Every structure is written in structure tokens, then in C-alpha cells.
Image (cartoon, rainbow, N blue to C red; front, top):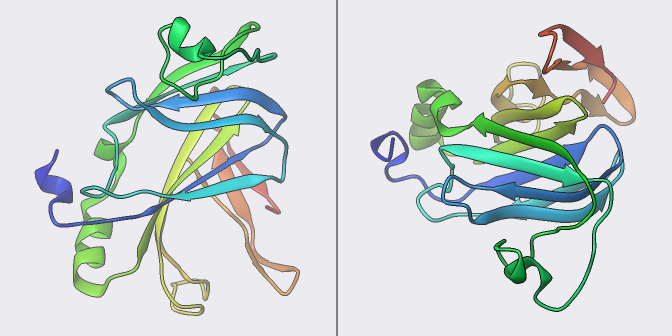
Length: 183
């Protein structure tokens, strides 16, 4: 898998949620904290940069809770990485493959033509959704947006000056149904 991403650096992580989620922890395959957020409510989204040989984990484990607790070194006392949320009842616990799903064509295009890789995560009550794309200049994408090779379990709507030019969609994690959205 390392050869697949050889020579690529950086990227952007984009995380949002379709419902109010508390105590969101996302761990990589080594159990390290990849992302954490105390509370997230739609349409809030968080962006973070990451790097080190492209930084695409083999898989991610997601968990969220009904509430969180706070105490000094509380996560460490529970065997969790520092900064992880804990407490309450665990409502979501999912493990999803990531790196193996990223298309080779996207990586080759990034090597040849550049662009910013985005790993996108959308939290759905029935399980997390994973998406990806390459970001370039406005109007360069196949649909007139700035995103190339958009794929995965969801794609955001293309909105320009407040008008939805292309609807978004997601694949329901339990039913497999494709659902169109205005976001």
C-alpha cells in the first residue's frame, strides 16, 4: 500500500455530520487519534491539513457518544490517546477501509497535474461515509466546479453564488440507496 502513495505529500481532511454528534473520535489503524471533535452540528464542518507521505490511513475507526466527560488525563487513564473523548454511552462504533478505496487514476493525475487531495468524512447516524477528490482552480472540474475525481460514498453539491448547480448525493450506509441532496 505504501507504494501506491509513494512521493505524494500533504492533503486536507474535511469532516462534517448529518446530525448532532458528540464526542467524535476517529482513530487510524495504529490506534492513534486521527481526528476528534467534542460536538458537531450540521452544517458545521472542520478542515485540517495533514501530511507525511500523503497521510492516508489503511482504515479508520469511528466512535461517538451521547455525552462526554472531562477530567485531567481522563483519556490517558482509560487507555485512549491524549485528546480523545470519553464518557457516556457509545452510540457509534464503525471501522471503514480508506487507502485501498482511493482510485489509482486520482493518484496518477495528482502526480502529473498537481492539485490538493481532499479526504472527506461525513458522519451519518447509520455509519460514516468516506469521500475524496482533487481540488484545482474554479471551473477546471468536469462539471465546472474545482473538483476532479470526486468519488466515494458521497459528493457535496456544487453551489455557486447561492445556487445549486449540481446536487450532492450520498450512499446510505445500511440500504445502499443513493440519496440526492442540496448540500
